Image 1 (spheres, rainbow, N blue to C red):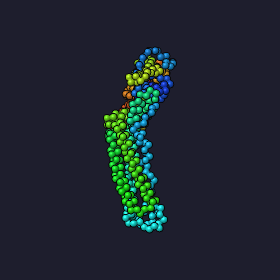
Image 2: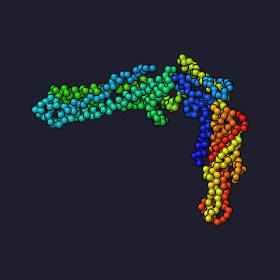
Image 3: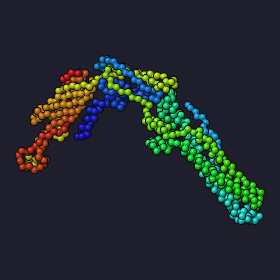
Image 4: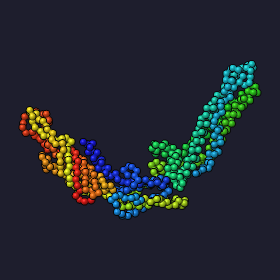
Length: 512
């Protein structure tokens, strides 16, 4: 029963509120379409008292402001129906000098000394000897081991220096790119040629890169603070990079000292001496390369734009606004005349007008209006029945039994109908009714009716109604039920209201 009541209420509310007209104007493609009750319609008729919502879409509201003027006129709607009335480029920055030297961060493929210099009392074949010249002295072996250990230490340090250097270079490149994207972001929003969705897509890409925001996640204040003061963060990394290079140079001086001691012992042949000298020169050149790169980084820092919290906060505000930005604006009104004409203009902002943008006048929109809420009364006959059929109760063989009464009742009914005027010969509305029973035990009993109606005919005088009916019915009282044992002659009953259904036909008595 609750589901049935909900159905009738839903039909009634749909009849009353689903007639608003939505007009969509896509500026980018100069297209207009109309939606009513969730469906696209070809005839944009709107009833008096309903709302018209004009959705102007796909226009750059950073560049233009929307202006809508409406005018109305009256006309007589014929009863048979109414005819239609209606690129950029970025320059090289402070990182250009660093890019050429980036390849020097890649370490050479191994150290020749690791397999060439003997580290134990074995053969010296790695130095070009055949292994027949005897064993090296203990002092030479000790220095060779120290030399090899120093090379290994330097190799480990160079891996760390190269990793840190790559990170610094990436930060510098990102910082320069962010500065460029911020400048382009300011130009992008008022670009006169790009369509709005492209502006939004590019703007979001720029801001997500600048803020290091992840699409689909909420951007927090902590994320903003981490992103701020990037120059200082890079400076700290450069300082750490210089410290690592100083430690590497200390190891290089130690390596040179050990090399000189080994050469002073004069126990290596010429080939071995040359190989020793080559390993040292290779390490020295790499250290010089790191030192040169550190100087280039320090020179690049002052040329970078500092990003403080306030500047990043302004970008964050724009980011949050752009996430839900539709590049659209709505205009709504309630029509009162028979025809409404809408004139839509896009007025450039002051800055856009200076840049050469001009006012755009869009195609006019004409909307026919008809009808309005009607209230009529009618009188007729309804046939009603209860969901639980009434019964006559009596005692048979000491047991309460029930006999079903008539399945429906004829009831004289007076209705009040309220409905929106339709252009067709049939209108759909709602009805309230009051009825008086005729004939038999139901004579004079009041019943109440509620439900949808069909108002038919050009004069709209014949009305078919159906829906819920409420009226009184006799039921067992004092907690008695069918089948109970009972030894009295008079069975106590009670009169209660119950729900039922009805179908009625009535005639309009208040004219059109």
